[in-house]
Image 1: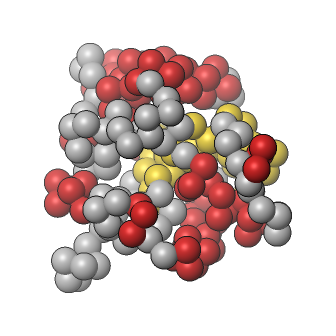
Image 2 (image 1 turned 60 degrees about the horizontal axis):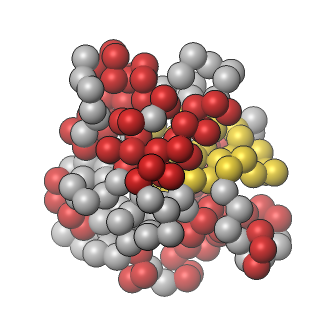
Image 3 (image 1 turned 45 degrees about the vertical axis):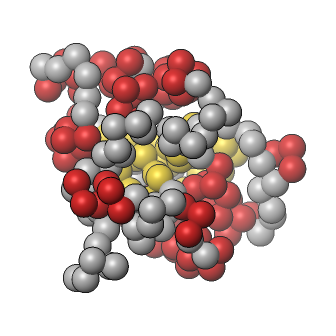
Length: 192
C-alpha cells in the first residue's frame, strides 16, 4: 500500500454497542495509526467526559481515553470506521462522488457486524447514506437534525452527533459531551 492509499483499519467486531462512523481519516491520524489522533480534536476529551465511556474507562483503569485506546475499545462495545476510507488533510478534499461510492461498503459493514447503533460524527458523514437509502435529499430544515434518525439498517439504529472536529465551531466541547451523554441515555438496550 502506498502512502496515498494508507488509511486506518476498521475496528469492528460482532455485537458492538456503538459503531462510530467518521467522514474520513485525517492524514495525521493515519500517520499516528489511531482514530481522532490530533490533540485538538474534541472526540477523546468529550467522549471521556461522557457517561457513554464509563464502562470502557473503568475496564481500562483510566480517567481519560486517548487515541491509543481505540484498538482496545471493541472489547468494551465500541468500534470505529469512516464513510470514506481515503485519508486527506481535510474532508473538503473529498470529491462528492467518493461519498456516493463509499455508501455500499459502509452499509455492508453495518449489515455484517450489526452494531446496536451506528453513530455518525456529523451530518456530512450521514447525508450520503440517508440519500442512498431513501432517494431523498437530506437538506434544508432536516439537514441539521442530530440524534436518532428514522432509518434502520439490519436492526442497527442510526444516530447523528456533531462532528468533533475543532473546525466545527457550532458546538462547544460541553455540547459535544452532552451529545455523547444523550447517546448513552438512548443506548439502554445494553449496559453501556
